[in-house]
Amino acid sequence: MTEIEQLKHEVELLKKQLDESKRMSRVYLQNVAHQLTAPLGAIKWSIEALKDESIPVHRRGNLLRSVYSQATILVHLIKNFALMSNLEADEQLGQMRNQEDIDPMLLAINLTNDFQPQAAEQGNKKIEVDDFSFKTVLAGRKLKAEKNLIAQALSNLLENAVKYADEDSRIFVRGESGDGFGISVTSIGLPITEVDKKRIFERGERGATAQKRVPAGTGIGLYLASRVMRLHEGTITLDANGKKSQFTLNFPKNRIK
Amino acid sequence: MNQTFRILFVDDEPWLSEALRISMECRGFDCISKTNASAAWQILEKGNVDVVVTDIMMPGGDLFDDVNSEETGFEFIRRIRQRWPRQSIICLSVIADTSKIEALKKKSILYLRKGETPLATAIKLIESKATGKTSFY
Image (cartoon, rainbow over all chains, first blue to last red; front, top):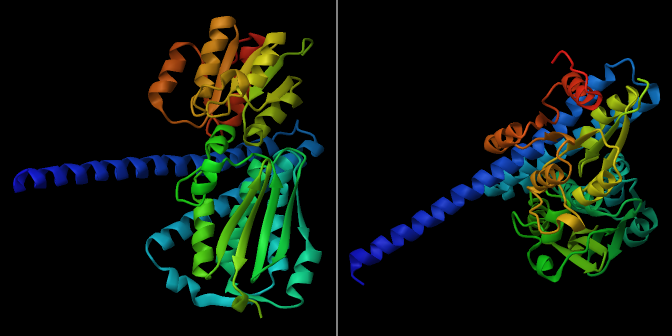
C-alpha cells in the first residue's frame, strides 16, 4: 500500500468514526428529549385534570401525587444531565471542593422519601431504610464526601430499583460493613444476565432485558454512579442472583470518621 | 350515559396517562389498563372493547416477543387491524417520527401526543370514537 493509499484509508476510517459518533449523539439527544417530554406531559395533563370540577376529591389526591413524582423524576434527570456534562468537561476536581461530613443514614432517608411516591405509583412498591444497619456500622461516625454527588449516585440506584423491581415488592437500603463503609440498595425484580453484568456500568448501556421491559431510559445512571464513586476513591459493585439485585456504593476506610 | 363504553389503555408507564384515564372514568367510561401488548391482546380476545388507546414504545410480552420494544405499538395495531378490522384504535404516544405518524393516519388511526394534545381534546376524541357520536372536533 502506498503512503497516499494508507492516508486515504485512515481518512475513511476517521470519517466512519465521526459518522458513528454523530449518530450516537443524535440517538442520545432524541432519548433525552423523550425522557424530558414524558414527565412534563404527565404534569401538564394532571394540572388540566385538576381544574376539572367533575373529578372527585379522592382522585385529585392521585393526580397531585403524580405531579409530585413526575417533578421528582425531572429534577433527578436534569441533575444527571448536568453532572454528565461536568464530567465530560473533566471538571471533577472542581466538583470535589465541597466535601463535607455527611450522615449517610439521613441522606438515605431523605432520598427514600423523595422516591417513595414514585415507588407507590409504579406498582405499589415500597422503599425501606434499614436504620439499624447504618447505626451499627457507623457507630456515630460520619462519611467525608461530596454530598450532592453521593446523593446523585444513590438516587440513580434508587430510581433503577423502583423502575425494575416487581410490583408490590420491597426495596431495601442498608449500611454495609467491610473494608470501609457501603450503602446498598437491594431489590427483587428484573434478573440481570451475565452478559449485562459485565457492561452495566458503561456509558449508554442498558441491559437487553431492561430495554425490553422498560423501553425508555438514558443508560447513564449507573455510569454516573460509578464515576462518582471513582472520584471518592471508592467503587460500585453489583451482586445479582436470579431476581435479586444488590448494588453497593463502597467507600474506603479513610472516608469514615 | 345509559350504555357503558369500555376503553382499553395499553401503556407500560400508565402513570403518564393517569390524568386521561381518571377523566374518562369520571365521565362514566369503564377503563381497563394493561402494561404490555400481550396482556392487552388477551382482553381484546374476550371482546367488548369500544376503543383501544395504545402507546408505541412498550414491552410486547409473550405474544410479541420477537418485536423490537420501540415498535411494539405499530405491530400491535397491525395485528388488531388484521384480526378485528372494525376495532377503533387511538394511538397515544410521545414518538416524533412523522413518517410513522402519517402512516398511522392513513389507516385512519388517530394519533394523540401524550401531554401535548390538550387533555380536553383527547377526552372529546376518545369519547366520540367510543360512543360513535361526532364531537365538535
